[in-house]
Image 1 (spheres, rainbow, N blue to C red):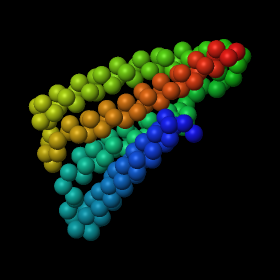
Image 2 (image 1 turned 30 degrees about the vertical axis):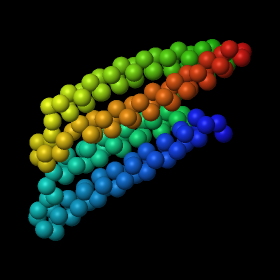
Image 3 (image 1 turned 90 degrees about the vertical axis):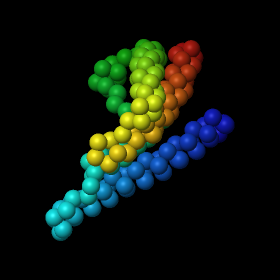
Length: 162
């Protein structure tokens, strides 16, 4: 296993751990809120905001992992009709388009995160700063970009071999 593969595995393990913690926080706050409403007639303050912010972390982790594992949706009905060479060329084209779109998304997210940091933007109910969560989202998109780039290089190599 090469250095970059090992590094990718370590990064994925770390972010999956962070995502698992965020998912447990999300679950605990929703269950606690439901029990608080049912048993004590008092909800937990800021449940929706806390669950939403934890959801940002979960999704930021999931998008990079999904690309790494190739567990995204492919329209096999159409793709299976292509010859292997045409399918490989279509993979290069779609990965290139995806990388461009995600890079543009990364620019917009990072710009918004910097703006949020400058303005010290916070949530309405709990007053939690939103910038760290926007930067977390940006990190997830960077990881997605890196795996898209890796898969694009692999797809180009596959097309060149044929």
